[in-house]
Length: 287
Image (tube, rainbow, N blue to C red):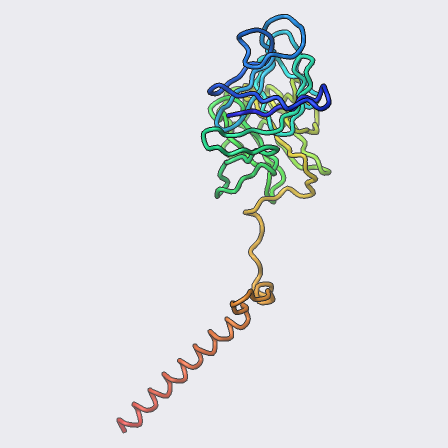
Protein backbone atom coordinates (compact mmCIF):
# COMPACT_ATOMS: atom_id res chain seq x y z
CA UNK A 1 0.00 0.00 0.00
CA UNK A 2 1.19 3.51 -0.81
CA UNK A 3 -0.04 6.70 0.81
CA UNK A 4 0.19 9.87 -1.30
CA UNK A 5 0.76 13.05 0.69
CA UNK A 6 0.87 16.52 -0.81
CA UNK A 7 2.91 19.03 1.14
CA UNK A 8 1.12 22.37 1.26
CA UNK A 9 3.88 24.27 3.08
CA UNK A 10 5.68 25.32 -0.10
CA UNK A 11 4.10 26.09 -3.45
CA UNK A 12 5.23 24.06 -6.42
CA UNK A 13 6.75 21.28 -4.35
CA UNK A 14 6.23 17.78 -5.69
CA UNK A 15 3.84 15.55 -3.69
CA UNK A 16 5.58 13.44 -1.12
CA UNK A 17 5.01 9.72 -1.52
CA UNK A 18 5.17 7.53 1.56
CA UNK A 19 5.32 3.81 0.91
CA UNK A 20 4.05 1.70 3.75
CA UNK A 21 6.62 -1.10 4.22
CA UNK A 22 4.23 -3.96 4.79
CA UNK A 23 1.48 -2.43 6.88
CA UNK A 24 2.95 0.61 8.66
CA UNK A 25 5.18 3.65 8.22
CA UNK A 26 6.66 6.19 10.62
CA UNK A 27 6.94 9.93 9.97
CA UNK A 28 9.39 11.96 12.03
CA UNK A 29 13.11 12.57 12.48
CA UNK A 30 15.86 10.00 12.60
CA UNK A 31 16.90 6.77 10.90
CA UNK A 32 14.01 4.75 12.33
CA UNK A 33 11.49 6.81 10.37
CA UNK A 34 10.32 5.86 6.88
CA UNK A 35 9.85 9.52 5.98
CA UNK A 36 11.96 12.25 7.57
CA UNK A 37 10.41 15.64 8.14
CA UNK A 38 12.10 18.39 6.07
CA UNK A 39 13.03 20.68 8.97
CA UNK A 40 15.26 20.71 12.02
CA UNK A 41 14.09 19.11 15.23
CA UNK A 42 14.83 16.43 17.80
CA UNK A 43 14.96 12.80 16.71
CA UNK A 44 11.93 10.60 17.18
CA UNK A 45 8.72 9.55 15.43
CA UNK A 46 5.84 12.02 15.17
CA UNK A 47 3.15 10.08 13.34
CA UNK A 48 2.31 6.49 12.43
CA UNK A 49 0.40 5.37 9.35
CA UNK A 50 -0.91 1.81 9.50
CA UNK A 51 -3.01 -0.42 7.29
CA UNK A 52 -5.72 -2.62 8.78
CA UNK A 53 -8.49 -4.42 6.90
CA UNK A 54 -8.04 -2.34 3.74
CA UNK A 55 -8.24 0.90 5.71
CA UNK A 56 -5.57 3.45 6.62
CA UNK A 57 -5.25 4.71 10.18
CA UNK A 58 -3.02 7.34 11.74
CA UNK A 59 -1.79 7.95 15.26
CA UNK A 60 0.02 10.88 16.85
CA UNK A 61 3.22 9.83 18.61
CA UNK A 62 5.42 11.32 21.28
CA UNK A 63 5.15 14.84 22.61
CA UNK A 64 4.66 16.39 19.19
CA UNK A 65 1.20 17.61 18.31
CA UNK A 66 -0.72 16.29 15.31
CA UNK A 67 -4.05 17.53 14.03
CA UNK A 68 -6.67 16.10 11.68
CA UNK A 69 -9.01 18.58 10.00
CA UNK A 70 -8.03 21.10 12.66
CA UNK A 71 -8.76 18.80 15.62
CA UNK A 72 -5.94 17.76 17.93
CA UNK A 73 -5.32 14.02 17.94
CA UNK A 74 -4.92 12.19 21.22
CA UNK A 75 -1.47 10.65 21.56
CA UNK A 76 -1.34 6.98 20.57
CA UNK A 77 -5.02 6.77 19.64
CA UNK A 78 -5.55 5.47 16.11
CA UNK A 79 -7.73 7.56 13.82
CA UNK A 80 -9.28 6.69 10.47
CA UNK A 81 -7.54 8.45 7.57
CA UNK A 82 -9.35 9.14 4.29
CA UNK A 83 -8.36 10.81 1.01
CA UNK A 84 -8.81 14.56 1.21
CA UNK A 85 -7.87 14.71 4.89
CA UNK A 86 -5.69 17.62 5.95
CA UNK A 87 -3.11 16.76 8.57
CA UNK A 88 -0.63 18.72 10.63
CA UNK A 89 2.30 16.51 11.66
CA UNK A 90 4.48 18.50 14.03
CA UNK A 91 4.83 21.66 11.87
CA UNK A 92 4.31 19.99 8.51
CA UNK A 93 0.98 20.61 6.76
CA UNK A 94 0.03 17.81 4.41
CA UNK A 95 -3.05 16.71 2.50
CA UNK A 96 -3.84 13.06 1.90
CA UNK A 97 -4.30 12.74 -1.85
CA UNK A 98 -5.13 9.05 -1.93
CA UNK A 99 -3.90 5.49 -1.70
CA UNK A 100 -2.82 2.83 -4.17
CA UNK A 101 -2.87 -0.91 -3.75
CA UNK A 102 0.52 -2.15 -4.94
CA UNK A 103 -0.54 -5.79 -4.83
CA UNK A 104 -3.33 -5.20 -7.36
CA UNK A 105 -1.70 -2.30 -9.17
CA UNK A 106 -4.80 -0.16 -8.74
CA UNK A 107 -4.53 3.51 -7.87
CA UNK A 108 -7.39 5.35 -6.21
CA UNK A 109 -6.10 8.89 -6.02
CA UNK A 110 -8.61 11.21 -4.44
CA UNK A 111 -10.96 8.45 -3.30
CA UNK A 112 -11.11 5.20 -1.41
CA UNK A 113 -14.07 2.91 -1.94
CA UNK A 114 -15.09 1.19 1.26
CA UNK A 115 -15.51 -2.41 0.13
CA UNK A 116 -18.04 -3.49 2.70
CA UNK A 117 -21.11 -5.49 1.77
CA UNK A 118 -24.46 -4.03 2.70
CA UNK A 119 -26.85 -6.60 1.35
CA UNK A 120 -24.69 -6.60 -1.74
CA UNK A 121 -21.32 -5.42 -2.96
CA UNK A 122 -22.10 -1.74 -3.49
CA UNK A 123 -19.36 0.61 -2.26
CA UNK A 124 -20.76 2.90 0.40
CA UNK A 125 -17.97 5.40 0.92
CA UNK A 126 -20.42 8.20 0.07
CA UNK A 127 -22.81 7.29 2.90
CA UNK A 128 -22.41 8.26 6.57
CA UNK A 129 -21.45 5.36 8.81
CA UNK A 130 -20.11 4.33 12.19
CA UNK A 131 -16.83 2.44 12.47
CA UNK A 132 -16.15 0.47 15.63
CA UNK A 133 -12.54 1.08 16.65
CA UNK A 134 -12.08 -1.54 19.38
CA UNK A 135 -13.74 -4.41 21.19
CA UNK A 136 -15.23 -7.62 19.78
CA UNK A 137 -16.75 -5.75 16.83
CA UNK A 138 -13.58 -3.85 15.92
CA UNK A 139 -13.57 -2.96 12.24
CA UNK A 140 -17.35 -3.37 11.88
CA UNK A 141 -19.05 -0.75 9.77
CA UNK A 142 -22.61 0.34 10.62
CA UNK A 143 -24.29 2.55 7.98
CA UNK A 144 -26.27 5.57 9.15
CA UNK A 145 -28.71 5.33 6.28
CA UNK A 146 -32.19 4.21 5.49
CA UNK A 147 -35.70 5.35 6.18
CA UNK A 148 -35.16 4.90 9.91
CA UNK A 149 -33.11 7.98 10.79
CA UNK A 150 -32.62 7.09 14.43
CA UNK A 151 -30.55 4.23 15.82
CA UNK A 152 -30.21 3.03 19.37
CA UNK A 153 -26.95 1.70 20.79
CA UNK A 154 -26.61 -0.46 23.86
CA UNK A 155 -26.17 -3.90 25.34
CA UNK A 156 -29.77 -4.96 24.76
CA UNK A 157 -30.64 -7.14 21.78
CA UNK A 158 -33.45 -4.69 21.01
CA UNK A 159 -30.91 -1.99 20.10
CA UNK A 160 -30.08 -1.35 16.45
CA UNK A 161 -26.38 -1.61 17.30
CA UNK A 162 -25.79 -4.12 20.09
CA UNK A 163 -22.49 -3.89 21.99
CA UNK A 164 -21.07 -6.75 24.04
CA UNK A 165 -19.54 -4.43 26.63
CA UNK A 166 -20.23 -4.76 30.36
CA UNK A 167 -19.62 -1.02 30.78
CA UNK A 168 -22.40 -0.20 28.32
CA UNK A 169 -25.97 0.16 29.56
CA UNK A 170 -28.81 -1.84 28.04
CA UNK A 171 -30.05 1.25 26.23
CA UNK A 172 -27.05 3.51 26.35
CA UNK A 173 -27.31 6.11 23.61
CA UNK A 174 -29.02 7.02 20.37
CA UNK A 175 -27.90 8.77 17.19
CA UNK A 176 -30.45 10.60 15.08
CA UNK A 177 -30.72 12.96 12.13
CA UNK A 178 -32.01 16.35 13.28
CA UNK A 179 -32.09 19.56 11.23
CA UNK A 180 -29.58 18.26 8.66
CA UNK A 181 -27.05 17.13 11.24
CA UNK A 182 -26.36 13.93 13.15
CA UNK A 183 -26.74 14.23 16.91
CA UNK A 184 -25.99 11.81 19.74
CA UNK A 185 -28.02 11.72 22.93
CA UNK A 186 -27.24 9.73 26.07
CA UNK A 187 -30.15 7.63 27.36
CA UNK A 188 -29.45 8.10 31.08
CA UNK A 189 -26.71 5.48 30.93
CA UNK A 190 -24.61 4.54 33.94
CA UNK A 191 -21.26 5.64 32.49
CA UNK A 192 -22.43 8.35 30.14
CA UNK A 193 -21.57 9.10 26.51
CA UNK A 194 -18.40 10.97 25.53
CA UNK A 195 -17.70 12.82 22.29
CA UNK A 196 -14.03 13.66 21.75
CA UNK A 197 -13.34 12.96 25.45
CA UNK A 198 -16.06 15.39 26.60
CA UNK A 199 -19.12 14.09 28.43
CA UNK A 200 -22.30 14.93 26.54
CA UNK A 201 -25.38 16.61 27.94
CA UNK A 202 -28.56 16.50 25.91
CA UNK A 203 -28.30 16.35 22.14
CA UNK A 204 -24.73 16.81 20.92
CA UNK A 205 -24.07 17.57 17.22
CA UNK A 206 -21.59 15.25 15.51
CA UNK A 207 -18.97 16.11 12.91
CA UNK A 208 -16.95 13.94 10.57
CA UNK A 209 -14.45 11.71 12.40
CA UNK A 210 -15.74 12.54 15.88
CA UNK A 211 -14.98 9.91 18.53
CA UNK A 212 -17.93 8.54 20.47
CA UNK A 213 -17.13 6.54 23.60
CA UNK A 214 -19.73 4.31 25.25
CA UNK A 215 -18.37 2.37 28.22
CA UNK A 216 -15.15 0.77 26.93
CA UNK A 217 -16.21 0.95 23.28
CA UNK A 218 -14.87 3.61 20.95
CA UNK A 219 -16.79 4.46 17.78
CA UNK A 220 -15.83 6.85 14.98
CA UNK A 221 -18.51 8.54 12.93
CA UNK A 222 -17.66 9.16 9.27
CA UNK A 223 -19.68 11.84 7.48
CA UNK A 224 -18.56 12.38 3.88
CA UNK A 225 -18.28 15.99 2.72
CA UNK A 226 -21.58 15.90 0.87
CA UNK A 227 -24.83 17.83 1.17
CA UNK A 228 -27.16 15.18 2.51
CA UNK A 229 -30.81 16.18 2.69
CA UNK A 230 -32.20 12.76 3.57
CA UNK A 231 -30.11 9.77 4.65
CA UNK A 232 -30.94 6.89 2.35
CA UNK A 233 -29.44 3.83 0.77
CA UNK A 234 -29.90 1.89 -2.42
CA UNK A 235 -31.89 -0.86 -0.72
CA UNK A 236 -34.50 1.67 0.47
CA UNK A 237 -35.56 2.88 -2.96
CA UNK A 238 -39.01 1.49 -3.73
CA UNK A 239 -39.42 -0.60 -6.92
CA UNK A 240 -40.82 1.35 -9.83
CA UNK A 241 -44.60 1.13 -9.80
CA UNK A 242 -46.38 -0.71 -12.61
CA UNK A 243 -47.89 2.42 -14.15
CA UNK A 244 -44.44 4.04 -14.22
CA UNK A 245 -42.90 0.99 -15.89
CA UNK A 246 -45.65 1.02 -18.53
CA UNK A 247 -44.76 4.61 -19.39
CA UNK A 248 -41.04 3.93 -19.78
CA UNK A 249 -39.92 4.33 -23.42
CA UNK A 250 -38.61 1.24 -25.13
CA UNK A 251 -34.95 1.02 -26.01
CA UNK A 252 -33.67 0.27 -29.53
CA UNK A 253 -34.83 -3.17 -30.65
CA UNK A 254 -36.92 -3.66 -27.52
CA UNK A 255 -40.68 -3.63 -27.00
CA UNK A 256 -42.16 -1.27 -24.50
CA UNK A 257 -43.75 -2.67 -21.36
CA UNK A 258 -47.19 -1.76 -22.74
CA UNK A 259 -46.77 -3.51 -26.09
CA UNK A 260 -45.16 -6.54 -24.42
CA UNK A 261 -48.08 -6.92 -22.00
CA UNK A 262 -50.64 -6.47 -24.83
CA UNK A 263 -48.96 -9.21 -26.89
CA UNK A 264 -48.98 -11.57 -23.93
CA UNK A 265 -52.72 -11.01 -23.35
CA UNK A 266 -53.52 -11.55 -27.05
CA UNK A 267 -51.62 -14.85 -27.06
CA UNK A 268 -53.43 -16.01 -23.93
CA UNK A 269 -56.82 -15.04 -25.39
CA UNK A 270 -56.08 -16.84 -28.64
CA UNK A 271 -55.11 -19.97 -26.73
CA UNK A 272 -58.37 -19.92 -24.76
CA UNK A 273 -60.42 -19.52 -27.95
CA UNK A 274 -58.62 -22.41 -29.65
CA UNK A 275 -59.15 -24.65 -26.63
CA UNK A 276 -62.86 -23.77 -26.49
CA UNK A 277 -63.29 -24.44 -30.23
CA UNK A 278 -61.58 -27.82 -29.87
CA UNK A 279 -63.95 -28.82 -27.04
CA UNK A 280 -67.01 -27.84 -29.09
CA UNK A 281 -65.67 -29.84 -32.07
CA UNK A 282 -65.12 -32.95 -29.95
CA UNK A 283 -68.61 -32.67 -28.43
CA UNK A 284 -70.20 -32.27 -31.90
CA UNK A 285 -68.39 -35.38 -33.23
CA UNK A 286 -69.54 -37.47 -30.25
CA UNK A 287 -73.22 -36.57 -30.78
